[in-house]
Amino acid sequence: MTDHFGSCLCGTVSFEVKGDFDSFYLCHCQHCQKDTGSAHAANLFSQSAKLVWRSGADAVTSFTLPGTRHNKSFCKLCGSALPNTQIPGLLVVPAGCLDTEISMLPTAHIFSSSKAGWDEKLEQVPKFEGLPD
Image (cartoon, rainbow, N blue to C red; front, side, top):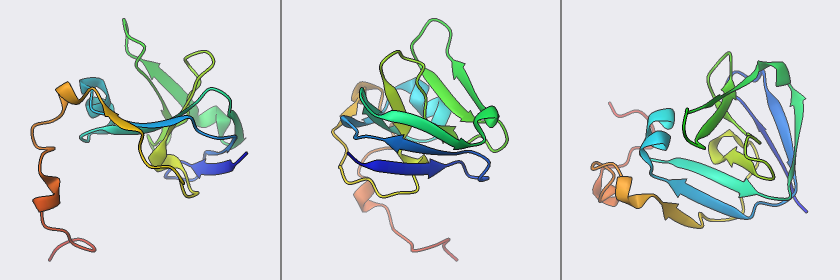
């Protein structure tokens, strides 16, 4: 069993995930594009790991898109995506909120039929180590 630690951007919320992840999906659905502001969401899923809030649990809030199972938990202060347990028996952890290394590679891209048009051939886009001049 592995322990993972994470936090929000402002540091108000910190948490521990006790256990292992079953899968790691890059979701390209339009809901995930909207709530991340990016091409996809990167979420880890577990049916057995346990979430422990170490600090700031009162700063965590959630939003469920009406008529869907799409849910996002986040810090009320900085807006950082945080783990959620809104689907019974399933822990969903945004990969970017973890402070510890993730040993697994993504399992799959999902909802690729909704993929953003600009999310193609990204290996051809120039790379910079920091902000370009």
